[in-house]
Image (cartoon, rainbow, N blue to C red; front, side, top):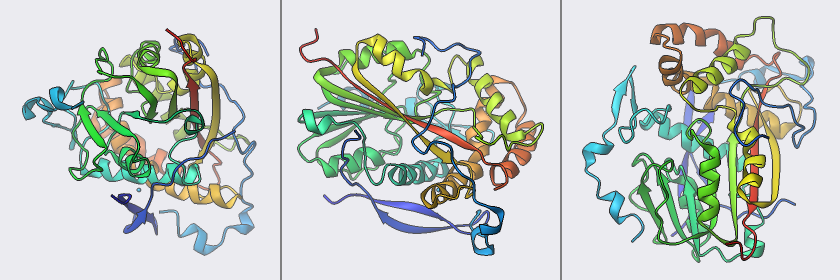
Length: 377
């Protein structure tokens, strides 16, 4: 089966989108904190792969640029009654019904399109690679687990690229396609519960799960226990707050305030929006070795001078900047008890700052991978 085509939302003029087909699924090549996060702590400012990002000089930004401102493993659980997985409507969006309240992002078609666009942004970030760890240099990936599979797009691409692997994607919702490669299955389950897999995995992959796990040390302990000897785990996650290397945030910045309230809301719900900044140490504490952490910047718009980062910023604006309502609504209404109207009024200024090229903000994307030692019990 060929790699699935992604309905990528091309950034055009502000607030508009057009759809095109983009083939994805390249095989990756390897790239050469406290145990529990401090509930009041913020992300430490570590260097990213680009170092300090240089903004575009104002005179270099032309009219055309500004116009682009503007997207048999599964058998037991899959037999759950559909009523257990029926989504519910909240503030105009649909949310997962299974373990209701544990996941704060919507579970509707609009969110599915955003997640597929997010997959495109990750491929751009990683130069077309589906993973970064050197697992394929050391292991034959017989069994692969994708935690938080979402729409299943990463798992589909990986299964297509690795027909020698048997791939299992796990998620709270049944948002995945019916037509998938023969070596891929999906399981509807809560990864925060006790893992009951009948076999161990050679590679465990997780992406954008920040805010979805309450007890990360337990998560890493279970992942370690379910890896084969020498098996790898890789996590990819965003971590607020947004950063600015030149302190270009305006006074009383709404964008900075948004990062703060997102983190506070998650804390009130027993989650950590900045969990990625602690993954490296937590993996080491769980027994992983050769743990590597790398950071990649996601600019909020086209402000960087670097052409790749400029393109990334346009996509990130489309994917996050114009989806702030869906990303923020459940967090702020559940975690801070704001009304939906208060959320929307607050987001007006956040959205304006997100797309302002004079504000040189970016969000760090953490890539953390490690290996279970050979012959570890």
